[in-house]
Amino acid sequence: MCLIIQTDKPKNLDLDLMECAYENNSDGFGVMFYNNGKIHTHKILPKTFDDVKKVFVPYQELNIPMGIHFRFATQGDTTKALSHPFQVLNKKEHGKDLWVMHNGASLPTAMIDKGKSDTHQFIKWFLKPQLINNPKLLYNEDWQELISDIIGSDKMLFLDGDTKEFTIINPQNGEDVSGVGWLSNTYSIKRGVGYDYDVKKGKKLPINYYGNYGSHYGKTSWTTDWDNSYVDWDYDNDKPKNTRTYAESQSDLAVPTTQESFSQEMIDAKYYNESGIYSEIKDEDLVSATPEEIMEMCEENPIGIAEWIYSMVKV
Figure (spheres, rainbow, N blue to C red):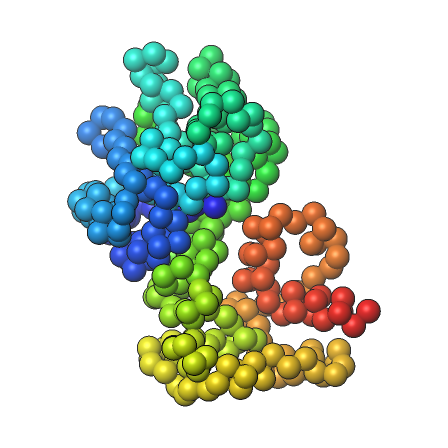
């Protein structure tokens, strides 16, 4: 799925966040920024997070607006060339430098060039032919809406060498994180490889050896060894609270016998999302939702999702 970070102050980026992003999206890394009269890009096929740090930390010290991309390959080969960003236009041929990063499962494009990614082919067969003749289309609201309709819930980040500005297609499908910047998603740093990172808490989260950390109705557990023992983790103090067996940990998930007791129990225990908001999920909310949107619903409104699942099970 990949991850794009657009930040105005790279020095604010926690290297723990960067490491989690790499652990979960390790098929390519790249940056793009404007400095000293031109767009600078750097992309690699990292073997370890140290490779990422060697590239990123010197640029981080510049502390200027920057686009950062971690690739999770879904289409095409895993190569440095298919890491992001990609050049759409170049100044010598087209009178303008324009680069782009993409985040999404798969762009709607013909896969004509063997071994190339969907982003590469979408640029070649769709974006470039349109923008060559009229680069200003990028700032046309109707054109942006057209691109949004075509790519669905996917996101794109453009950097224009003339305006020195970033343009995001579908910014509403990402998340603005205070002190960090805009992230194209947060679920891809919680996929369960290596560590998870909570952008709101600004810290790493331990995960179990199955590769998932799970919030059991507000109680987060972590498998610590191969005998399925669990630890309830105190994130505020960064220490374990107590150890339980896997079976004991699952007792938190026991489904009450009635809808009323289910709802009241959850409310009494303050099983709300972090904003304290709980809203009802309706069938129509899920029928038209993409997998990415459903994952975001699970993160942002766990009670609503739980209530909906319970209502379906009890039908």
